[in-house]
Length: 191
Image (cartoon, rainbow, N blue to C red; front, side, top):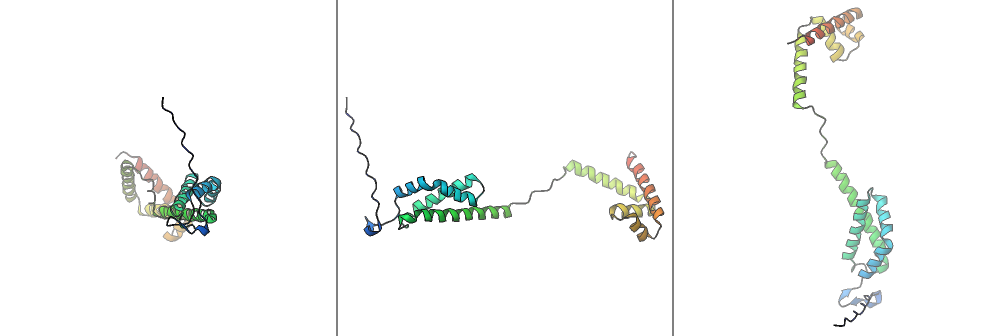
């Protein structure tokens, strides 16, 4: 039976400091191990920062994850590992602002909802009713038609109608009452 030897533990990556200058021709910066530790220690606080700026948890998580991805990509440019958290915070703020700008722009560009429209059938019935109303209005006496149009379509008071037509308030009431009765009969009559 073969013997399986244990694999030796991997050495932790060497963290270069400012005095080292460069290691293997690459500029000193934040290491992956340091970024991992920063993630473990500060993920929740960065999530809280994003939550103050954004309104939903999914967006907050996306922003924080994107911030870590961007810092990871630019880790060689962060010369001082102590500034990694500050860089992450600033990235979270900037990404949150961008997310809010995209939302605002999306709301502006979002088409306005169509008003509730009647179906074609309802529109046809409405047109038939309008046509029959216009026909019935044409069959009224001139004064009855004038009083009803001013009273109900121009939304005038009885006193305003009387003044406009130069007739008494009693005449307006009489013409209006007779006109409505005639319209009711005309509209209820079978075609």
